[in-house]
Image 1 (cartoon, rainbow, N blue to C red):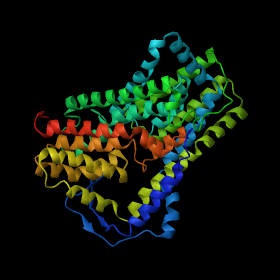
Image 2 (image 1 turned 45 degrees about the horizontal axis):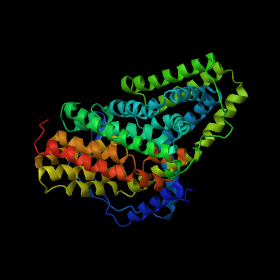
Image 3 (image 1 turned 60 degrees about the vertical axis):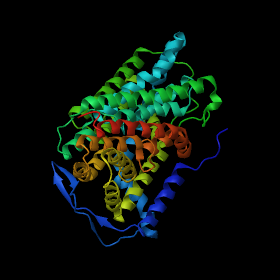
Image 4 (image 1 turned 30 degrees about the horizontal axis):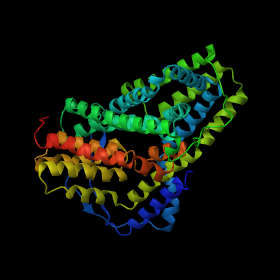
Length: 460
C-alpha cells in the first residue's frame, strides 16, 4: 500500500518559505547585463553588491500570484490542453486507438516491451532537436493510459516521454534553445562538435531506455513492486468505456491528432512556435474533434471544463514553483549564487574544472530552470573561465548542457516537473526516490563523458 506522502503543494510551499528566509542571510548582488543578438546576457567581471532586499511575511503571500503571473503562459497552456484532450477523450478516439495497440501487443507478445524504447527514442529525438520540454505535459495524457493498459503504472507512463525527452535534451547535438544559444554566447560555431554530442545523445538515450525497461519488466512480473500502486492519474476517470473500436470518425480524429503532433515539430523548428501557438493548435484540435466526433455543444463544453478542472492542481503547482524564483529574484540573491559558484571552479586542473562546471551548472539549474535562460546568464562567465583553466569552450558548453538537462528531471522549481508529477499523482518524494539511483548513475556517466574531451583524449 502506498504510504501517505507530503503533498506536492506542501513541498513547494516549504521551499518557498526557505527561500524567503535565505534572502535575509545571502548577500544581495547583481551582474550588469547587456543585449547580444536580442538576448540579455551577463557581463563577465561586472558582479557588484547592492542594497539587500530581504523578503518578508507579506512578500511570502504575494509570491504565489506573482509566480502565477510569471508562469501564466504555461498555466494557461496546461488548462487549455487539458480541456482539449478531454474533448478528444470524449469522442472515444484515443481509447479506441490505445486498445487497438494493445490488441496488437497481445497478439504479438514479444513486441509489447519494444513499445517503450520505440516511443522513448521518438521523444528523445524531440528533446535533441527542438528542445521538447513543456510539450511533455501533452504527451503524458496519452502515455499514462497506454502504460496502464499494458499492465504498468503511472511512473512508466510519465517516464516514457519525460525521461525520453529529458535524455535527448541533456545529450542534444542540435537543440537550438540550449546548445545553439550557449555556443553562440561562447563564440564558437553553432552546432559544431555535433559528432561527439551525437555519441553523447546515444549513450544518454540508451541509458534512459534501459532504466525504464528494467523497471517495466519488474512491474510486469510483480505489480506490487510499484511504489505507487494502481492509482489513477489526475485526468483519468472510472467511467471510461471498457471496449471501443476504430470507426471512420475516430480514425479521422486520430489522423488530426497525429497531424497536430507533426505541427508541433514543424512549428517549433521552423516558425518559432512556443506555448501560445501550441495551445492554440490543441484548442483547434479539440473543436475539430468535437465536430468530427458528432458531440453536441453542451457535451463539448462539459468535457472541456472537466478536463481543465482535472489539471487545476497541476496548474497551481506550476505557479507556486515559479513563486520560488520570484522570491529569489526580488531578494537579489540569484546573481550572488551564480557569482559564488563560478568562483568555486577557479583553481582546478582542466579535467576537475570541467567536472566542477557540470556540478555548478546543475546547482544553478535549481534557480534558473529555463535552459535558454541559464545559457544566457552562465555562459558569459563560463566561457572566459574555461579559457583561463585550459578547458575548451566546447567542453564548457557540454558541462552546461549536462547540468541543465539532467537535473531538469528532479528540481522542484521546475513547473514542468512538478506539474507532470501532480497530473500523474506521483508524490515528489516517491519520484525522487525512484529516479535517484538513475540520476546518480547518469552523473557518473556525464563526468566520464566530460573527462574524455577535457583530458585531450578527444579533440573537438
